[in-house]
Length: 447
Image 1 (cartoon, rainbow, N blue to C red):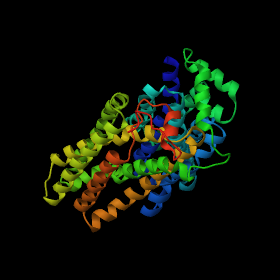
Image 2 (image 1 turned 30 degrees about the vertical axis):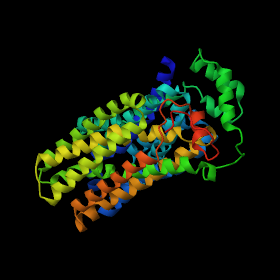
Image 3 (image 1 turned 135 degrees about the vertical axis):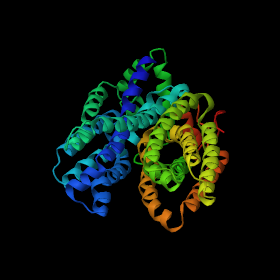
């Protein structure tokens, strides 16, 4: 079990680079716009936004290398992309070159949301799969905090501080790449490629006390009846496809990225000063990390569905209070408290569950593509929703925006109650059999 933890943490470090890469640009934002004298539109869409569009492309296409090359090789290439992106961005002397290297880093971010959860879910025992895959989400929020701290430390070192801010990521990226070379290949991926002897060797290393032959038979049974070249859009995979779409859709329709990107603006709109708003946004990051840790601790104890119940109710309360604050002109620290409640609800619910759940619900031979589908829905909405926030705030007002988000979380609560299955403690092969259209008997843990 110790080895599984080490390998899971190694793969989850892709999430640390994801969080770091996403946020580190905030420290160089204004400096770069002044340095290259960019217009607001060019700066927002090209200089800053290119990494996000790289993430969307990485999520759309990341399932291909994850399935073709394997989880391990894809994770290694992700580390290489991060390293190239960090060094290239730091050495850039014009906005187009900078944007190209940031796009490369975005590809790594998008692909990591596919390969890392898929890999961890395939090596983890069913009873510990939630917390092990949850390490990926923890590393994301940890990477965000370290990026803020790194930017703070490097901010005053001179006119080239921005180069150090974006370039320092090359150090953890290179270390991660070396570590990724040491992990074994996924046994389930090996079996899906009919590399039985290699799979048997890896299974023996992952858990020496496990009957490798029995597990191999279970994995083989799960793939029986599959058609060479089939895809996730076949009718028999409709249910897991709906599940992946819904959890990713509701993740972004909670308004989470609008909160994270515009927390200072929202707090200033509520009457807090700029410095207090910025300090509160740092507190939001700390709250996010602490409640993500709590979610990881609880996910294999209480289950995915129970955490989603807690998160959904917390969302509805927090968003309704924020909406009321804008309707009734409540000002001051109360809005910050409501935002903290919202972040806590997200971290313990959707934040902890989404990557775990999507990595569990597709069959072994299509997991990479299924993960890609869920990640793509997530990232496309992550690009669209925050970009609309300034326009919506100016036209219909923050109160209506947060009322809409609260209503969407009511719909999420209905999804959790009536559609979402509990996947806690069930093997991936059992889940595959029970969630496809051809299922005849549901395991007792599936509700």
